[in-house]
Length: 380
Image (cartoon, rainbow, N blue to C red; front, side, top):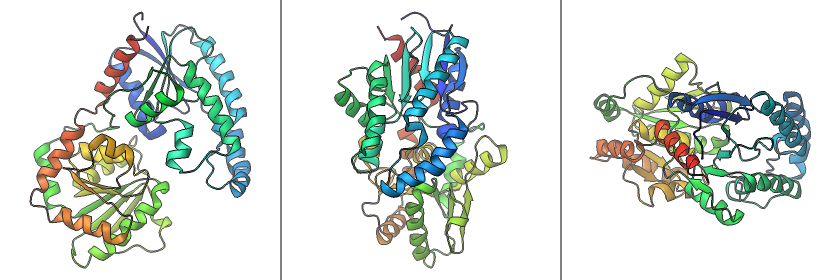
């Protein structure tokens, strides 16, 4: 295709803010600009009033009758129509772009003759069937059908995960659904990464680290219970939880610190986040089905061994046996306690740290965007 100079990046949120969707839109647009592209950030976030009413009123009623539904406002027909009106308006305003890039699988620029590229993790059907472990409800099928039309019409669909890309390629019978080979780490760290200093800190560390939002509450609770069993054996042991505040736990053992959400866009919180990551002995999240992939690989980037559940995407990427930590095969206190003890007893602990870094050292945004644009230029 012709040379790309201007790119309209459509995001359901403000891509100039680091805390939008796990930092991805911000780092994507920033890297595109660093590589010389002119980027127009277009926010297609739903109407706040409609969204608040649906999620706080309609969704609550709906979830009483349909257990575990994830039919939020952004999945509704109203939002679908509303967002396409917004896309039409923005397309008139910024109609000189060479490419439409959506950080979503739910929309595309129907009003432009330029290529439409969709970037996300997995589609709505996968989210329900594989992450929620159930079949879609009848109203969720409506949203799945709408999303399917979007994906079929897009010029290129990119998934962050190879298994999701392969699955969608088969289900949609569409060859231009791809994974770019390696994932990407959402690092916003403005200092030099000093390997020797980090390894020295980790060697003497007694800190267990958990990073995850409230949806990983059960994984955090299990870790706290395991920590309580280990504390008498390792009196200097500490546990740091980032992403869940202490108000969610009725009582915390001595040595547990809960920071709640730390915003990397705020200097002090950013420094605290990376200070804890660098000082951690191990990063742990053993929540079944999905265990905080992004925070885990970011920990690995900073030489941190891992203890995780053997969820499919992680196993597919890093193998059934890890040389940078352990899988916790059973979601119970004793299994996790045993895995932590094994890690503390390893004589080759520093090698685990180096192996963790080695696995993901190339997962940079610079590399990812270069691969993405190469894939786009290969479009016919």
